[in-house]
Image (cartoon, rainbow, N blue to C red; front, side):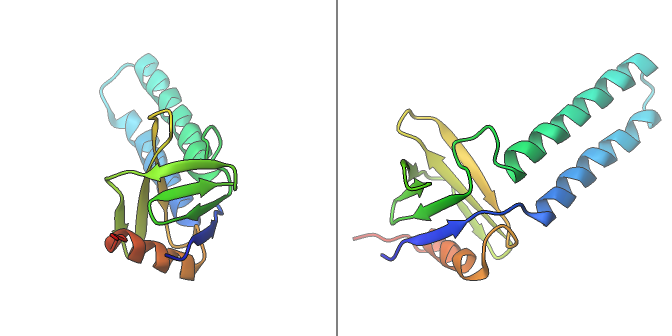
Length: 136
Protein backbone atom coordinates (compact mmCIF):
# COMPACT_ATOMS: atom_id res chain seq x y z
CA UNK A 1 0.00 0.00 0.00
CA UNK A 2 1.03 3.57 -0.63
CA UNK A 3 2.13 5.42 2.54
CA UNK A 4 0.00 8.37 3.61
CA UNK A 5 2.12 11.39 4.55
CA UNK A 6 0.45 13.75 7.02
CA UNK A 7 1.56 17.20 8.17
CA UNK A 8 -0.36 18.07 11.32
CA UNK A 9 -1.62 21.57 12.07
CA UNK A 10 -3.75 22.93 14.93
CA UNK A 11 -7.48 22.33 14.53
CA UNK A 12 -9.73 25.36 14.91
CA UNK A 13 -12.72 23.06 15.44
CA UNK A 14 -11.02 21.27 18.32
CA UNK A 15 -9.89 24.58 19.85
CA UNK A 16 -13.48 25.85 19.72
CA UNK A 17 -14.88 22.66 21.22
CA UNK A 18 -12.36 22.56 24.07
CA UNK A 19 -12.78 26.26 24.92
CA UNK A 20 -16.58 25.97 24.67
CA UNK A 21 -16.85 22.90 26.90
CA UNK A 22 -14.44 24.19 29.54
CA UNK A 23 -15.94 27.69 29.37
CA UNK A 24 -19.42 26.22 29.82
CA UNK A 25 -18.24 24.36 32.91
CA UNK A 26 -16.83 27.60 34.31
CA UNK A 27 -20.09 29.45 33.61
CA UNK A 28 -22.13 26.79 35.41
CA UNK A 29 -19.98 26.72 38.54
CA UNK A 30 -21.62 29.79 40.17
CA UNK A 31 -25.01 28.10 39.80
CA UNK A 32 -23.99 25.25 42.08
CA UNK A 33 -24.73 25.26 45.80
CA UNK A 34 -21.07 24.77 46.70
CA UNK A 35 -19.17 27.21 48.88
CA UNK A 36 -17.08 29.85 47.14
CA UNK A 37 -13.88 28.02 48.15
CA UNK A 38 -15.03 24.82 46.40
CA UNK A 39 -16.18 26.80 43.37
CA UNK A 40 -12.80 28.53 43.18
CA UNK A 41 -10.87 25.27 43.45
CA UNK A 42 -13.07 23.55 40.85
CA UNK A 43 -12.70 26.59 38.58
CA UNK A 44 -8.93 26.33 38.83
CA UNK A 45 -9.14 22.60 38.02
CA UNK A 46 -11.28 23.33 34.94
CA UNK A 47 -8.84 26.02 33.76
CA UNK A 48 -5.90 23.65 34.28
CA UNK A 49 -7.75 20.96 32.33
CA UNK A 50 -8.42 23.42 29.48
CA UNK A 51 -4.74 24.38 29.36
CA UNK A 52 -3.57 20.77 29.40
CA UNK A 53 -6.12 19.67 26.78
CA UNK A 54 -5.22 22.50 24.39
CA UNK A 55 -1.53 21.86 24.88
CA UNK A 56 -1.82 18.09 24.39
CA UNK A 57 -4.44 17.77 21.63
CA UNK A 58 -3.89 21.00 19.67
CA UNK A 59 -0.19 21.87 20.07
CA UNK A 60 0.94 18.22 20.40
CA UNK A 61 3.14 19.14 23.38
CA UNK A 62 3.98 16.52 25.95
CA UNK A 63 3.54 13.64 23.51
CA UNK A 64 5.75 11.71 21.13
CA UNK A 65 3.87 12.92 18.07
CA UNK A 66 5.03 16.31 16.86
CA UNK A 67 4.07 17.66 13.44
CA UNK A 68 4.43 14.94 10.79
CA UNK A 69 3.66 11.28 10.44
CA UNK A 70 3.55 8.67 7.72
CA UNK A 71 0.89 5.97 7.92
CA UNK A 72 2.07 2.66 6.51
CA UNK A 73 -0.07 -0.48 6.16
CA UNK A 74 0.04 -1.44 9.86
CA UNK A 75 2.42 1.07 11.44
CA UNK A 76 3.04 4.79 11.74
CA UNK A 77 6.38 6.49 11.20
CA UNK A 78 6.64 9.64 13.34
CA UNK A 79 9.01 12.39 12.15
CA UNK A 80 10.92 9.83 10.07
CA UNK A 81 12.59 8.48 13.25
CA UNK A 82 10.08 6.65 15.51
CA UNK A 83 7.74 3.74 14.80
CA UNK A 84 4.40 2.96 16.40
CA UNK A 85 1.91 0.23 15.52
CA UNK A 86 -1.68 1.00 14.59
CA UNK A 87 -3.55 -0.56 17.50
CA UNK A 88 -7.13 -1.78 17.50
CA UNK A 89 -9.72 0.78 18.47
CA UNK A 90 -9.18 3.34 15.72
CA UNK A 91 -12.27 5.16 14.51
CA UNK A 92 -13.14 6.68 11.15
CA UNK A 93 -16.05 9.04 10.51
CA UNK A 94 -16.46 11.64 7.74
CA UNK A 95 -15.64 14.43 10.23
CA UNK A 96 -13.40 12.62 12.74
CA UNK A 97 -10.52 10.12 12.70
CA UNK A 98 -9.03 8.66 15.85
CA UNK A 99 -5.76 6.78 15.49
CA UNK A 100 -4.79 4.45 18.31
CA UNK A 101 -1.04 4.02 18.39
CA UNK A 102 0.95 1.49 20.39
CA UNK A 103 4.58 2.31 20.98
CA UNK A 104 7.30 -0.36 21.33
CA UNK A 105 7.29 0.17 25.12
CA UNK A 106 3.56 -0.85 25.14
CA UNK A 107 2.39 2.73 25.83
CA UNK A 108 -0.85 3.55 23.96
CA UNK A 109 -1.72 6.97 22.63
CA UNK A 110 -4.75 8.27 20.73
CA UNK A 111 -4.44 10.94 18.06
CA UNK A 112 -7.60 12.94 17.29
CA UNK A 113 -7.77 14.24 13.72
CA UNK A 114 -10.46 16.58 12.43
CA UNK A 115 -10.81 17.70 8.79
CA UNK A 116 -8.95 20.95 9.43
CA UNK A 117 -5.99 19.17 11.08
CA UNK A 118 -4.69 17.65 7.82
CA UNK A 119 -5.17 18.28 4.12
CA UNK A 120 -8.34 16.87 2.51
CA UNK A 121 -6.68 14.13 0.44
CA UNK A 122 -4.72 12.73 3.37
CA UNK A 123 -7.83 12.82 5.56
CA UNK A 124 -9.86 10.91 2.96
CA UNK A 125 -7.09 8.34 2.40
CA UNK A 126 -6.72 7.84 6.14
CA UNK A 127 -10.45 7.27 6.59
CA UNK A 128 -10.41 4.69 3.79
CA UNK A 129 -7.34 2.96 5.25
CA UNK A 130 -9.03 2.63 8.65
CA UNK A 131 -12.35 1.43 7.24
CA UNK A 132 -10.76 -1.07 4.83
CA UNK A 133 -7.45 -2.22 6.32
CA UNK A 134 -4.96 -4.02 4.12
CA UNK A 135 -4.97 -7.77 4.69
CA UNK A 136 -2.51 -9.76 2.54
